[in-house]
Amino acid sequence: MDFQLTPDQREIQALARDIAKAEIEPHAAQWDREHTFPRDLYPKLAELGLMGVCIPEEYGGAGADFLSYILVLEEISRADAGVGVTVAVHTSAVTLPILTFGSDEQRARFVPPLARGDAIGAFALTEPESGSDAASLRTRADATGDGWQISGTKQFISTAEHAGTFLLFARTDQDTPGARGVSAFILDAEHIRVTGREEKLGLNSSVTNSIAVDAAVERDRLLHEEGRGFHVAMATLDGGRIGIAAQALGIAQAAYDVARAYALERRQFGKRIGEFEAVQWKLADMSTELDAARLLVYRAAWLKQQGEPHTEAGAKAKVFASEMARRHSGEAIQILGGYGYTTEFPVERYYRDARVTEIYEGTSEIQRLVIARTILGLSERSLASAS
Ligand SMILES: Cc1cc2nc3c(=O)[nH]c(=O)nc-3n(C[C@H](O)[C@H](O)[C@H](O)COP(=O)(O)OP(=O)(O)OC[C@H]3O[C@@H](n4cnc5c(N)ncnc54)[C@H](O)[C@@H]3O)c2cc1C
Image (tube, rainbow, N blue to C red; front, top):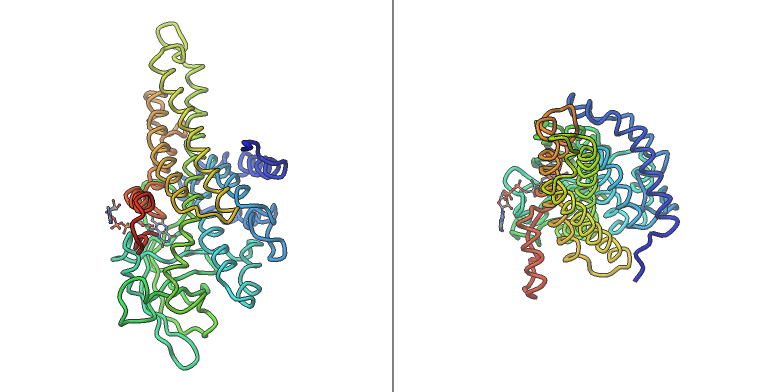
Protein backbone atom coordinates (compact mmCIF):
# COMPACT_ATOMS: atom_id res chain seq x y z
CA MET A 1 0.00 0.00 0.00
CA ASP A 2 1.16 3.49 -0.76
CA PHE A 3 -1.03 6.45 0.16
CA GLN A 4 1.30 9.04 -1.40
CA LEU A 5 0.50 10.76 -4.66
CA THR A 6 3.35 10.54 -7.16
CA PRO A 7 5.38 13.70 -7.93
CA ASP A 8 3.56 13.96 -11.30
CA GLN A 9 0.16 13.67 -9.64
CA ARG A 10 1.08 16.32 -7.06
CA GLU A 11 2.31 18.61 -9.81
CA ILE A 12 -0.90 18.41 -11.82
CA GLN A 13 -2.97 18.81 -8.63
CA ALA A 14 -1.05 22.01 -7.82
CA LEU A 15 -1.47 23.27 -11.38
CA ALA A 16 -5.24 22.73 -11.20
CA ARG A 17 -5.42 24.34 -7.75
CA ASP A 18 -3.52 27.40 -8.99
CA ILE A 19 -5.69 28.00 -12.03
CA ALA A 20 -8.84 27.32 -10.01
CA LYS A 21 -7.79 29.92 -7.43
CA ALA A 22 -6.74 32.48 -10.04
CA GLU A 23 -9.31 32.09 -12.80
CA ILE A 24 -12.35 30.31 -11.36
CA GLU A 25 -12.92 30.93 -7.64
CA PRO A 26 -12.93 34.75 -7.84
CA HIS A 27 -15.76 34.64 -10.42
CA ALA A 28 -17.79 31.67 -9.20
CA ALA A 29 -20.35 33.67 -7.18
CA GLN A 30 -21.02 36.00 -10.11
CA TRP A 31 -21.31 33.16 -12.63
CA ASP A 32 -23.77 31.49 -10.29
CA ARG A 33 -25.80 34.67 -9.77
CA GLU A 34 -25.87 35.63 -13.44
CA HIS A 35 -26.06 32.07 -14.80
CA THR A 36 -22.95 32.63 -16.88
CA PHE A 37 -21.31 29.80 -18.78
CA PRO A 38 -17.65 30.94 -18.73
CA ARG A 39 -16.91 30.21 -22.38
CA ASP A 40 -13.53 32.01 -22.30
CA LEU A 41 -12.27 29.86 -19.44
CA TYR A 42 -12.07 26.63 -21.42
CA PRO A 43 -9.31 27.67 -23.84
CA LYS A 44 -7.27 28.65 -20.76
CA LEU A 45 -7.84 25.23 -19.21
CA ALA A 46 -7.00 23.65 -22.56
CA GLU A 47 -3.73 25.55 -22.78
CA LEU A 48 -2.66 23.88 -19.53
CA GLY A 49 -3.74 20.46 -20.80
CA LEU A 50 -6.73 20.32 -18.46
CA MET A 51 -9.29 19.53 -21.18
CA GLY A 52 -7.48 16.27 -21.90
CA VAL A 53 -5.62 15.42 -18.70
CA CYS A 54 -5.78 11.64 -19.04
CA ILE A 55 -5.68 11.47 -22.85
CA PRO A 56 -2.38 10.24 -24.34
CA GLU A 57 -0.08 12.89 -25.77
CA GLU A 58 -0.25 11.33 -29.23
CA TYR A 59 -3.96 12.26 -29.25
CA GLY A 60 -3.37 15.83 -28.08
CA GLY A 61 -3.84 15.20 -24.35
CA ALA A 62 -1.59 15.76 -21.34
CA GLY A 63 -0.79 12.04 -21.05
CA ALA A 64 -1.41 11.86 -17.29
CA ASP A 65 -3.11 8.97 -15.50
CA PHE A 66 -6.79 8.74 -14.53
CA LEU A 67 -6.13 9.61 -10.87
CA SER A 68 -4.48 12.86 -12.01
CA TYR A 69 -7.65 13.69 -13.92
CA ILE A 70 -9.70 12.97 -10.78
CA LEU A 71 -7.45 15.31 -8.77
CA VAL A 72 -8.05 18.02 -11.38
CA LEU A 73 -11.83 17.58 -11.17
CA GLU A 74 -11.68 17.77 -7.38
CA GLU A 75 -9.69 21.03 -7.45
CA ILE A 76 -11.82 22.66 -10.14
CA SER A 77 -15.06 21.66 -8.39
CA ARG A 78 -13.73 23.06 -5.13
CA ALA A 79 -13.78 26.43 -6.88
CA ASP A 80 -16.87 25.95 -9.07
CA ALA A 81 -18.80 22.71 -9.49
CA GLY A 82 -20.44 23.94 -12.71
CA VAL A 83 -17.04 24.14 -14.38
CA GLY A 84 -16.31 20.74 -12.83
CA VAL A 85 -19.24 19.06 -14.57
CA THR A 86 -18.42 20.64 -17.91
CA VAL A 87 -14.86 19.26 -17.77
CA ALA A 88 -16.07 15.90 -16.41
CA VAL A 89 -18.65 15.28 -19.14
CA HIS A 90 -16.26 16.50 -21.83
CA THR A 91 -13.46 14.20 -20.70
CA SER A 92 -14.85 11.04 -19.19
CA ALA A 93 -18.21 10.87 -20.96
CA VAL A 94 -17.11 11.86 -24.47
CA THR A 95 -13.36 11.91 -25.15
CA LEU A 96 -12.48 8.73 -23.22
CA PRO A 97 -15.21 6.51 -24.75
CA ILE A 98 -14.24 7.60 -28.27
CA LEU A 99 -10.64 6.77 -27.39
CA THR A 100 -11.65 3.42 -25.89
CA PHE A 101 -14.25 2.23 -28.38
CA GLY A 102 -13.38 4.16 -31.54
CA SER A 103 -11.72 2.78 -34.68
CA ASP A 104 -8.24 4.11 -35.47
CA GLU A 105 -9.81 6.50 -37.92
CA GLN A 106 -12.40 7.77 -35.39
CA ARG A 107 -9.75 8.24 -32.71
CA ALA A 108 -7.48 10.18 -35.04
CA ARG A 109 -10.34 12.34 -36.26
CA PHE A 110 -12.33 13.13 -33.11
CA VAL A 111 -10.06 12.77 -30.08
CA PRO A 112 -7.35 15.42 -30.73
CA PRO A 113 -9.79 18.36 -31.15
CA LEU A 114 -11.52 17.30 -27.92
CA ALA A 115 -8.30 16.71 -25.98
CA ARG A 116 -6.89 20.06 -27.12
CA GLY A 117 -10.15 21.77 -26.16
CA ASP A 118 -10.92 22.94 -29.73
CA ALA A 119 -14.29 21.23 -29.37
CA ILE A 120 -16.25 20.64 -26.16
CA GLY A 121 -18.00 17.29 -25.75
CA ALA A 122 -21.61 16.49 -24.79
CA PHE A 123 -23.05 13.11 -23.78
CA ALA A 124 -26.62 12.53 -24.94
CA LEU A 125 -28.27 9.51 -23.34
CA THR A 126 -31.20 10.78 -21.25
CA GLU A 127 -34.57 11.39 -22.90
CA PRO A 128 -37.82 12.88 -21.61
CA GLU A 129 -39.15 9.39 -20.84
CA SER A 130 -35.91 7.50 -20.32
CA GLY A 131 -33.70 8.39 -17.36
CA SER A 132 -32.58 5.71 -14.90
CA ASP A 133 -34.03 3.14 -17.31
CA ALA A 134 -31.68 4.24 -20.08
CA ALA A 135 -32.25 1.06 -22.09
CA SER A 136 -35.79 2.23 -22.85
CA LEU A 137 -34.56 5.13 -24.98
CA ARG A 138 -36.54 5.91 -28.13
CA THR A 139 -34.30 8.06 -30.32
CA ARG A 140 -33.95 6.01 -33.49
CA ALA A 141 -31.21 5.46 -36.02
CA ASP A 142 -32.39 3.85 -39.24
CA ALA A 143 -29.88 2.43 -41.69
CA THR A 144 -30.01 4.11 -45.07
CA GLY A 145 -27.96 2.89 -48.01
CA ASP A 146 -24.83 4.78 -47.04
CA GLY A 147 -25.37 5.77 -43.43
CA TRP A 148 -27.92 6.48 -40.74
CA GLN A 149 -30.94 8.66 -40.37
CA ILE A 150 -31.09 9.64 -36.69
CA SER A 151 -34.13 11.26 -35.12
CA GLY A 152 -35.38 11.91 -31.62
CA THR A 153 -35.13 14.14 -28.58
CA LYS A 154 -32.80 14.18 -25.60
CA GLN A 155 -33.18 15.89 -22.25
CA PHE A 156 -30.84 17.30 -19.58
CA ILE A 157 -27.80 17.33 -21.86
CA SER A 158 -24.91 19.18 -20.21
CA THR A 159 -23.12 21.78 -22.35
CA ALA A 160 -25.07 20.95 -25.53
CA GLU A 161 -25.37 24.54 -26.70
CA HIS A 162 -21.58 24.98 -26.54
CA ALA A 163 -20.57 21.51 -27.70
CA GLY A 164 -18.87 20.62 -30.97
CA THR A 165 -18.95 16.82 -30.56
CA PHE A 166 -21.79 14.67 -29.22
CA LEU A 167 -21.76 11.08 -28.09
CA LEU A 168 -25.40 10.20 -28.71
CA PHE A 169 -27.27 6.95 -28.12
CA ALA A 170 -30.04 5.76 -30.44
CA ARG A 171 -31.99 2.58 -31.14
CA THR A 172 -30.78 0.86 -34.31
CA ASP A 173 -32.99 -2.19 -33.92
CA GLN A 174 -36.60 -1.13 -33.53
CA ASP A 175 -37.72 -4.74 -33.05
CA THR A 176 -35.40 -5.36 -30.10
CA PRO A 177 -36.55 -3.51 -27.01
CA GLY A 178 -34.11 -2.78 -24.21
CA ALA A 179 -30.36 -2.65 -24.15
CA ARG A 180 -29.53 -4.81 -27.16
CA GLY A 181 -31.14 -2.56 -29.73
CA VAL A 182 -29.09 0.51 -28.76
CA SER A 183 -26.03 1.89 -30.59
CA ALA A 184 -23.66 4.81 -29.98
CA PHE A 185 -22.96 7.58 -32.49
CA ILE A 186 -20.51 10.45 -32.77
CA LEU A 187 -22.30 13.55 -34.01
CA ASP A 188 -21.32 17.17 -34.67
CA ALA A 189 -23.03 20.35 -33.52
CA GLU A 190 -24.55 20.77 -36.99
CA HIS A 191 -26.54 17.55 -36.50
CA ILE A 192 -28.17 18.84 -33.31
CA ARG A 193 -30.80 21.47 -32.62
CA VAL A 194 -30.84 22.91 -29.11
CA THR A 195 -34.48 23.25 -28.12
CA GLY A 196 -34.28 24.47 -24.54
CA ARG A 197 -32.22 25.31 -21.47
CA GLU A 198 -33.15 24.24 -17.95
CA GLU A 199 -33.45 26.63 -15.01
CA LYS A 200 -31.75 24.76 -12.17
CA LEU A 201 -31.39 24.80 -8.39
CA GLY A 202 -27.65 25.23 -8.77
CA LEU A 203 -24.69 24.46 -11.00
CA ASN A 204 -25.52 27.70 -12.76
CA SER A 205 -22.18 28.10 -14.52
CA SER A 206 -22.99 24.96 -16.50
CA VAL A 207 -25.75 24.68 -19.07
CA THR A 208 -28.25 21.85 -19.30
CA ASN A 209 -30.16 21.60 -22.56
CA SER A 210 -32.88 19.72 -24.29
CA ILE A 211 -31.97 18.87 -27.88
CA ALA A 212 -33.55 17.42 -31.00
CA VAL A 213 -31.78 15.47 -33.69
CA ASP A 214 -33.01 14.83 -37.21
CA ALA A 215 -29.92 14.20 -39.28
CA ALA A 216 -28.48 11.96 -41.94
CA VAL A 217 -24.94 10.89 -41.05
CA GLU A 218 -22.35 8.66 -42.70
CA ARG A 219 -21.83 5.01 -41.71
CA ASP A 220 -18.57 5.82 -39.95
CA ARG A 221 -20.40 7.81 -37.25
CA LEU A 222 -21.33 4.55 -35.52
CA LEU A 223 -19.07 4.08 -32.47
CA HIS A 224 -18.14 0.48 -31.67
CA GLU A 225 -20.46 -2.24 -32.94
CA GLU A 226 -24.09 -1.91 -33.89
CA GLY A 227 -26.24 -2.99 -30.93
CA ARG A 228 -23.38 -2.50 -28.44
CA GLY A 229 -24.17 1.10 -27.54
CA PHE A 230 -25.60 0.25 -24.17
CA HIS A 231 -22.33 -1.43 -23.26
CA VAL A 232 -20.51 1.77 -24.31
CA ALA A 233 -22.88 3.84 -22.16
CA MET A 234 -22.51 1.65 -19.07
CA ALA A 235 -18.71 1.43 -19.38
CA THR A 236 -18.60 5.21 -19.80
CA LEU A 237 -20.73 5.78 -16.71
CA ASP A 238 -18.62 3.35 -14.66
CA GLY A 239 -15.70 5.75 -15.07
CA GLY A 240 -17.78 8.94 -15.20
CA ARG A 241 -19.21 8.27 -11.75
CA ILE A 242 -15.75 8.46 -10.24
CA GLY A 243 -15.53 11.95 -11.73
CA ILE A 244 -18.85 12.98 -10.19
CA ALA A 245 -17.65 11.56 -6.86
CA ALA A 246 -14.56 13.79 -7.20
CA GLN A 247 -16.81 16.74 -7.97
CA ALA A 248 -18.77 16.07 -4.75
CA LEU A 249 -15.51 15.74 -2.84
CA GLY A 250 -14.35 19.14 -4.11
CA ILE A 251 -17.62 20.80 -3.08
CA ALA A 252 -17.50 19.21 0.39
CA GLN A 253 -13.88 20.27 0.87
CA ALA A 254 -14.76 23.85 -0.04
CA ALA A 255 -17.69 23.83 2.43
CA TYR A 256 -15.49 22.44 5.19
CA ASP A 257 -12.76 25.03 4.54
CA VAL A 258 -15.20 27.91 4.91
CA ALA A 259 -16.88 26.41 8.00
CA ARG A 260 -13.57 25.74 9.73
CA ALA A 261 -12.25 29.25 9.12
CA TYR A 262 -15.53 30.77 10.31
CA ALA A 263 -15.55 28.66 13.49
CA LEU A 264 -12.12 30.04 14.37
CA GLU A 265 -13.24 33.66 13.87
CA ARG A 266 -16.85 34.09 14.87
CA ARG A 267 -17.31 34.92 18.55
CA GLN A 268 -20.48 34.39 20.61
CA PHE A 269 -20.86 34.22 24.40
CA GLY A 270 -17.32 35.58 24.65
CA LYS A 271 -15.75 32.64 22.81
CA ARG A 272 -14.90 31.58 19.31
CA ILE A 273 -17.75 29.27 18.20
CA GLY A 274 -15.13 26.60 17.38
CA GLU A 275 -14.62 26.32 21.13
CA PHE A 276 -18.16 24.98 21.55
CA GLU A 277 -18.29 21.21 21.50
CA ALA A 278 -21.38 21.16 19.27
CA VAL A 279 -19.46 22.96 16.53
CA GLN A 280 -16.30 20.92 17.11
CA TRP A 281 -18.21 17.68 16.57
CA LYS A 282 -19.65 18.90 13.31
CA LEU A 283 -16.16 19.81 12.06
CA ALA A 284 -14.71 16.53 13.31
CA ASP A 285 -17.38 14.56 11.44
CA MET A 286 -16.85 16.63 8.30
CA SER A 287 -13.11 16.09 8.37
CA THR A 288 -13.47 12.35 9.03
CA GLU A 289 -15.97 11.76 6.25
CA LEU A 290 -13.96 13.88 3.82
CA ASP A 291 -11.03 11.55 4.44
CA ALA A 292 -13.26 8.51 3.96
CA ALA A 293 -14.73 9.86 0.73
CA ARG A 294 -11.30 10.76 -0.61
CA LEU A 295 -10.02 7.24 0.02
CA LEU A 296 -13.04 5.74 -1.76
CA VAL A 297 -12.71 8.09 -4.73
CA TYR A 298 -8.96 7.66 -5.18
CA ARG A 299 -9.24 3.88 -4.78
CA ALA A 300 -11.89 3.72 -7.51
CA ALA A 301 -9.71 5.87 -9.78
CA TRP A 302 -6.67 3.72 -9.04
CA LEU A 303 -8.59 0.52 -9.84
CA LYS A 304 -9.73 1.99 -13.14
CA GLN A 305 -6.25 3.00 -14.17
CA GLN A 306 -4.92 -0.47 -13.27
CA GLY A 307 -7.50 -1.91 -15.67
CA GLU A 308 -9.22 -3.62 -12.74
CA PRO A 309 -13.02 -3.91 -12.34
CA HIS A 310 -14.24 -0.66 -10.81
CA THR A 311 -18.04 -0.69 -11.15
CA GLU A 312 -18.69 -1.44 -7.48
CA ALA A 313 -15.88 0.82 -6.21
CA GLY A 314 -17.04 3.71 -8.40
CA ALA A 315 -20.66 3.35 -7.27
CA LYS A 316 -19.59 3.26 -3.61
CA ALA A 317 -17.41 6.33 -4.09
CA LYS A 318 -20.23 8.24 -5.78
CA VAL A 319 -23.00 7.38 -3.35
CA PHE A 320 -20.84 8.12 -0.31
CA ALA A 321 -19.16 11.29 -1.59
CA SER A 322 -22.36 12.82 -3.00
CA GLU A 323 -24.43 12.21 0.14
CA MET A 324 -21.54 13.41 2.28
CA ALA A 325 -21.30 16.61 0.19
CA ARG A 326 -25.00 17.32 0.63
CA ARG A 327 -24.88 16.69 4.39
CA HIS A 328 -21.73 18.66 5.03
CA SER A 329 -22.55 21.63 2.85
CA GLY A 330 -25.75 21.76 4.94
CA GLU A 331 -23.73 21.59 8.16
CA ALA A 332 -21.47 24.35 6.85
CA ILE A 333 -24.55 26.57 6.52
CA GLN A 334 -25.45 25.66 10.11
CA ILE A 335 -21.99 26.62 11.39
CA LEU A 336 -22.23 29.99 9.66
CA GLY A 337 -25.72 30.55 11.08
CA GLY A 338 -27.70 33.32 9.38
CA TYR A 339 -24.70 34.36 7.28
CA GLY A 340 -24.56 30.85 5.87
CA TYR A 341 -28.03 31.30 4.46
CA THR A 342 -27.05 34.45 2.59
CA THR A 343 -25.11 34.88 -0.61
CA GLU A 344 -22.44 36.83 1.29
CA PHE A 345 -20.76 33.45 1.83
CA PRO A 346 -20.45 30.66 -0.73
CA VAL A 347 -21.81 27.81 1.40
CA GLU A 348 -25.40 28.19 0.17
CA ARG A 349 -24.05 27.74 -3.37
CA TYR A 350 -22.13 24.64 -2.33
CA TYR A 351 -25.34 23.24 -0.83
CA ARG A 352 -27.29 23.84 -4.04
CA ASP A 353 -24.48 22.51 -6.22
CA ALA A 354 -23.93 19.40 -4.11
CA ARG A 355 -27.51 18.25 -4.52
CA VAL A 356 -27.22 17.21 -8.15
CA THR A 357 -24.28 14.89 -7.49
CA GLU A 358 -26.85 12.52 -5.95
CA ILE A 359 -28.83 12.55 -9.19
CA TYR A 360 -26.79 12.59 -12.38
CA GLU A 361 -24.65 9.80 -13.82
CA GLY A 362 -26.97 7.50 -11.86
CA THR A 363 -29.04 8.46 -8.83
CA SER A 364 -28.10 7.26 -5.34
CA GLU A 365 -30.85 4.65 -5.60
CA ILE A 366 -29.29 3.31 -8.80
CA GLN A 367 -25.79 3.32 -7.24
CA ARG A 368 -27.15 1.19 -4.39
CA LEU A 369 -28.72 -1.19 -6.91
CA VAL A 370 -25.36 -1.48 -8.70
CA ILE A 371 -23.57 -2.20 -5.42
CA ALA A 372 -26.23 -4.64 -4.24
CA ARG A 373 -26.25 -6.60 -7.49
CA THR A 374 -22.48 -6.84 -7.43
CA ILE A 375 -22.14 -7.97 -3.82
CA LEU A 376 -25.03 -10.40 -4.19
CA GLY A 377 -23.70 -11.75 -7.49
CA LEU A 378 -27.02 -11.03 -9.19
CA SER A 379 -26.97 -11.07 -12.89
CA GLU A 380 -26.84 -8.66 -15.66
CA ARG A 381 -28.80 -6.10 -17.31
CA SER A 382 -26.29 -4.95 -14.79
CA LEU A 383 -28.55 -2.22 -14.50
CA ALA A 384 -30.53 -0.92 -17.23
CA SER A 385 -29.52 2.36 -15.99
CA ALA A 386 -28.39 5.16 -15.53
CA SER A 387 -27.12 8.22 -17.15
C1 LIG B 1 -27.94 19.15 -14.14
C2 LIG B 1 -28.10 17.85 -14.86
C3 LIG B 1 -27.20 17.51 -15.86
C4 LIG B 1 -27.35 16.30 -16.56
N1 LIG B 1 -26.49 16.02 -17.59
C5 LIG B 1 -26.73 14.93 -18.38
C6 LIG B 1 -25.95 14.70 -19.56
O1 LIG B 1 -25.00 15.43 -19.86
N2 LIG B 1 -26.27 13.66 -20.35
C7 LIG B 1 -27.31 12.81 -20.07
O2 LIG B 1 -27.55 11.88 -20.83
N3 LIG B 1 -28.06 12.99 -18.94
C8 LIG B 1 -27.80 14.04 -18.11
N4 LIG B 1 -28.58 14.26 -16.97
C9 LIG B 1 -29.68 13.35 -16.68
C10 LIG B 1 -29.46 12.53 -15.42
O3 LIG B 1 -28.46 11.61 -15.61
C11 LIG B 1 -30.82 11.91 -15.03
O4 LIG B 1 -31.60 12.98 -14.51
C12 LIG B 1 -30.69 10.80 -14.01
O5 LIG B 1 -30.09 9.66 -14.57
C13 LIG B 1 -32.05 10.36 -13.45
O6 LIG B 1 -32.98 10.16 -14.47
P1 LIG B 1 -34.42 10.89 -14.36
O7 LIG B 1 -34.17 12.33 -14.08
O8 LIG B 1 -35.20 10.56 -15.57
O9 LIG B 1 -35.08 10.27 -13.09
P2 LIG B 1 -35.94 8.91 -13.01
O10 LIG B 1 -35.18 7.81 -13.65
O11 LIG B 1 -37.31 9.18 -13.52
O12 LIG B 1 -35.96 8.66 -11.46
C14 LIG B 1 -36.88 9.32 -10.58
C15 LIG B 1 -36.67 8.71 -9.19
O13 LIG B 1 -36.99 7.31 -9.22
C16 LIG B 1 -35.88 6.56 -8.74
N5 LIG B 1 -35.77 5.29 -9.45
C17 LIG B 1 -35.82 5.07 -10.79
N6 LIG B 1 -35.65 3.77 -11.06
C18 LIG B 1 -35.46 3.14 -9.88
C19 LIG B 1 -35.22 1.79 -9.50
N7 LIG B 1 -35.12 0.81 -10.39
N8 LIG B 1 -35.08 1.53 -8.18
C20 LIG B 1 -35.16 2.51 -7.25
N9 LIG B 1 -35.38 3.80 -7.56
C21 LIG B 1 -35.53 4.12 -8.85
C22 LIG B 1 -34.66 7.44 -9.01
O14 LIG B 1 -33.56 7.08 -8.19
C23 LIG B 1 -35.22 8.81 -8.69
O15 LIG B 1 -35.20 9.04 -7.30
C24 LIG B 1 -28.41 15.44 -16.23
C25 LIG B 1 -29.30 15.78 -15.21
C26 LIG B 1 -29.15 16.97 -14.52
C27 LIG B 1 -30.14 17.32 -13.44
